[in-house]
Image 1 (cartoon, rainbow, N blue to C red):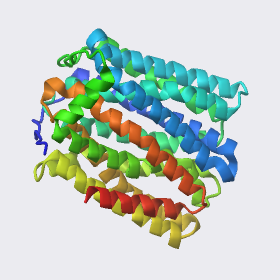
Image 2 (cartoon, rainbow, N blue to C red):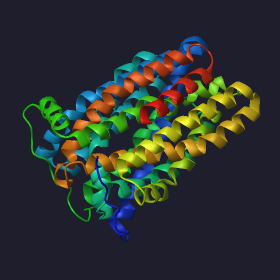
Image 3 (cartoon, rainbow, N blue to C red):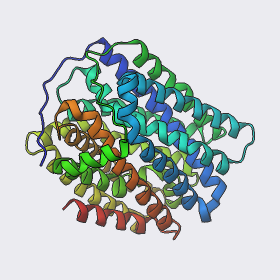
Length: 401
């Protein structure tokens, strides 16, 4: 099993604050993009097919992310880690702006977003592989898990504020503006990483001629990495889907308007994410990253079952209040498990192999993510939100235990 590094409390310098501020702005835009895209697709599918079509869109993006991930070490070896991140973020921003402009011009939502989904997924997948290393370099931290958890404060603030703002704004304006706003708010992150030097340059991994084979060999040769991958798979298959399905789930809450309710749910998850640095530090003092992540995953499953109970037993606004109260601890356990997964993968073979480890691990995790997404979407088609939550929660507990 993998160990962990507790991480020194390194004071943040100006580059770190600039990076975290840019991440906050970019994540604020990503919330607008998520709500805008999923709301447009849910509206196109109506009450009968909204969940299924949302699942197809999300699964398409996740599959594209999985396919692109093994090539990330090769791109980093050729262009550098920072340049790879900048390029992926720039293409992502351009794609969102173009897709949003097309929706505003009257293009049909479903084909437009399904065409754009592979670009969204490929650029996001590449960015997710190198983002923990970029964050660690700007924060001058010796613990990937702790630096990622500290970045989660910025992510949580942005998602919370973005959920509330996007829920209110997109209830009054066209959904295409959500995608355009996402593209525009990614620009500060691109400029920051391109122009501001971190405390140290993230080391570029060795290039592999056959990236898929290289990823498979890393997984085959390192049992610690395989266990870390199992932790990540459980998180994306059982805990993560609800966060992509906030619009169909909010419709299942029987609220008068689903978009503000969906934004409120995102904000509730984000409140839990804000605690990531403290929850991760607490977990690391008592266990390895891997074992602590398993506990967090099982507790997250328990919160999904609690959400199912709220949906089955409560109605109207009382139900929404119950969801908000349970979504906060769900956010705590979900994002703690994610940060601990990141730390377990980074420390599996030593820091010099971190990028290659992330590429190998994220390939499997992202290949499995569409499975959870499609199953959650199909279950929602039955019209009972609590069924999807009950099944996901029970599976999360069984998987991690």
